[in-house]
Image (tube, rainbow, N blue to C red; front, side, top):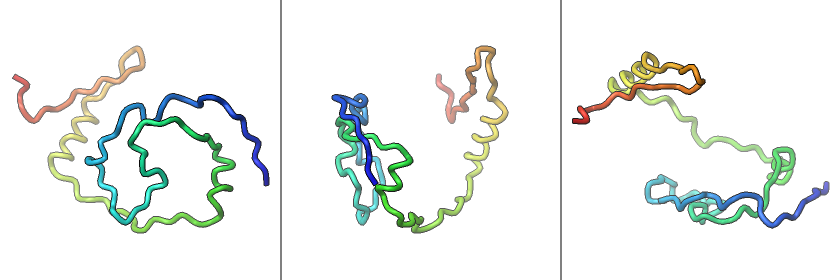
Length: 107
């Protein structure tokens, strides 16, 4: 199978647009990243469509190592979800307005 390509000087702006602080990420040490410099802004080298991506990736099955189970929601998280449900409205211009609960008074 062959792929037709268009060579262009630039696909988009640098991705990511700003440097990502990797110290805040929890990437297991045994995981090898396809792009170990993903956190540093750089140009996009190639853009693949979904139709060709899977062909290039191969016919191998992608499976999850473990299926995450839903953790127990704390009382505080449940209250936040309920507050979101009860206090979210759609404005006439189509935007949403959400009242955000605070743990402390902003004063």
